[in-house]
Length: 120
Image (cartoon, rainbow, N blue to C red; front, side, top):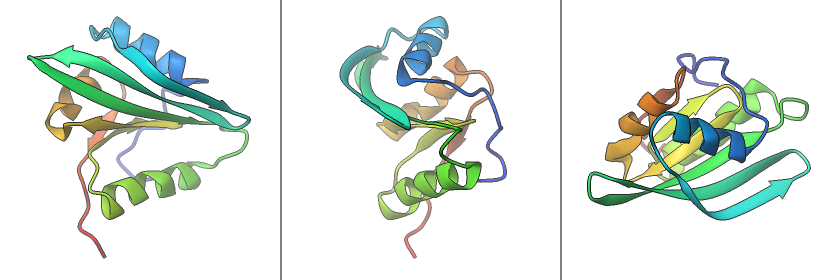
């Protein structure tokens, strides 16, 4: 896990992240939801500043995945695909367009924004 990513908050499911976004002022409409034995993911859309912002949310089970494994997943998105990520604890969000990642992070106390990394 990148050193600047806080260890919490942790969420049990993507629905918990969607709820937190709602409490932070963003009504996030879920368009895709998947539940797996060791985590869940979803895509939710937010209307913000006249733009549709897509949030690809991943929550990984702390019983199955270590912080390093969560960090590995984040790094792939940042380095290989140039994603801007919002992250904390056991979850992360690929925000599209990335310029709105700071707004999504502001709605999720304890999270940080991770900019894309250069390809190796």
